[in-house]
Image (cartoon, rainbow, N blue to C red; front, side, top):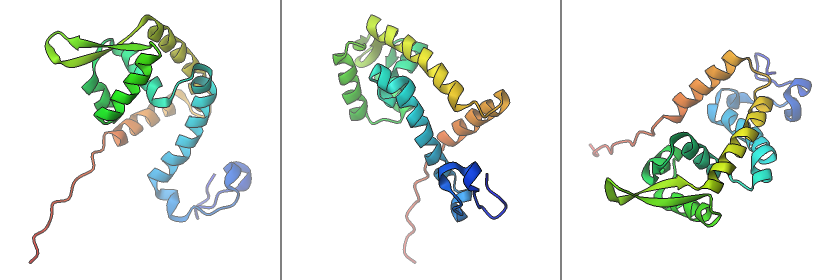
Length: 170
């Protein structure tokens, strides 16, 4: 826990000892990075290692489980992946027989990404394992705090970087 000066006590601050976070105390990205480390460790222990899944693969499976066949472009946008990144991931997952590509009947140029029977079973197992992970991760939060945290993170995640316009030299 940080005091008014940004000091973190060794007992409550865990591995951080008595470091003064200084400016970092107010830097959202720093705290998001620390949380990312914790969530990654929990993901690997609960879902990643047991099922042989990467974070992005898990997210893709969960989106397909929730939405059914989905255009590849929408998946790439939602996961903040470039088209080549999504293609490589889908190729790997298709090799593993977790999903397949299908032509969109309304637009033959576009493809839907579809769970296979094996992919659906894996997705349901991953969803089940992630519940335990989430319970462990949020055990220090009330239900209202957890909901508020998710709402705030969604707001931050929708931030779009503004591209500055060039100023003509005067």
